[in-house]
Length: 229
Length: 341
Image (cartoon, each protein chain N blue to C red):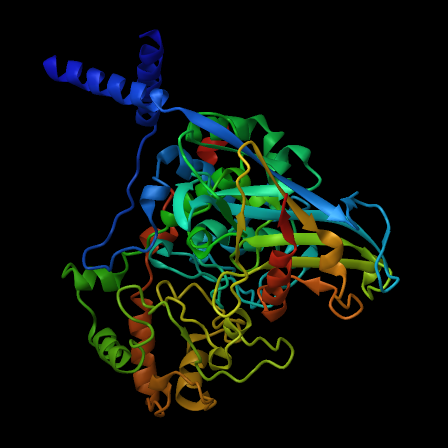
């Protein structure tokens, strides 16, 4: 009887400790831009090479969000991964709850899913394979998926499909991005989608659907196209 | 204080919820290596195994609701497809590889002939979404399951609520497949000194250990590795095996070493089902080897066997038949779930 009282007491103390710690919120937002304006899915755009393109799908994983202070990790978000889908407005905002007293001057995240998560058991939520971001024929998450139409594409229905991913050497496509920021309420990341397509020869490379050298190259290019606002 | 009481009650309820499930442990035969599957991430329960079994036998997993996992993985032929060299999908589509026998999967780390799948939980996705097999989307499977009260009940029993997700569906399928343990063949009984080999089987066993066991390693009868076993390339299929996954030249024509357990019933043999009889398989290893640069080292020296010795090896291989496995009622069509409509 006495023992159970202690158990209750310890539980109460630990609960109150959890509730007592004051947290504050920073909103992390993602936005797609095309020619400096908010990206409209399924709208036609003209690229500098006069190609007419439209974007049907743009979705990607953001994982392992960390806050840094003077190059030291001071906070690691506990959610394994977030699926950001430009077609789904609610997916574009991540609420990070961190201790109020914490100081930071940089934020880091993985663009994609790291090898640890890739080799683990099947997971739920945004990592559930029903989210359309998992390769069925060869195990592994798709880090970044962009699909649309291009006048220059030789494929049926003038499509292009870039499914970028791969977690094994030498085709490890994961990118780690770190940005300096001292914003406390809202951090906005923009992705310049037009710049991803500019310089790509869609008449030749219009389909990437497995871990490959091209998948890694385009993932590196993508990492350069995120900016913090 | 009320808040804490609520939390405590919630904790107690959660624990009770777990207790209502009947946990299940697979039998790990004596002397076997440690299994690779992490059961702590997917604790077996009878309810989840039953759900997985119902899914395994349900053609709802295919696009036009015509074929189930069991269509190509029939229990009586060690969960492979009798008389089918290549896998057989919806609308009579034919794939490019032989459906493998399913057993002792908890010990495997890679799946498929080329190891494309690295975890049992993700294995079911491949045949579900392959164009020449079930040609369905896992998202669509979940939508279909959600429309059936029968599955609402099965998920409720298995997971404590009727939420149907991809994760739960795939884990339940893993649960059923993990229970498919075959370890009661005559060979096993001889090893446990409950039975004895005939002279012929004993001769065959010694020859087997000399010529075959480096790849078909006891007790699983596979070393779980990928090997080039010197088969000529089929010029219609042009299947380069493991190389497609690793993109390494040294993996050209390497395929996963299959288990030999229940080999009596798992014909046709090889990754493309090219051999119908065990005698053809043995003749390949003595007379048919193509000497590729990455040929499995143990095949580099020619294997010489007399026809009598081949018969002896065959007699030994037949001792790997496990009738208790092939006719285990826990593995066949789940009639016990029929009342759930």
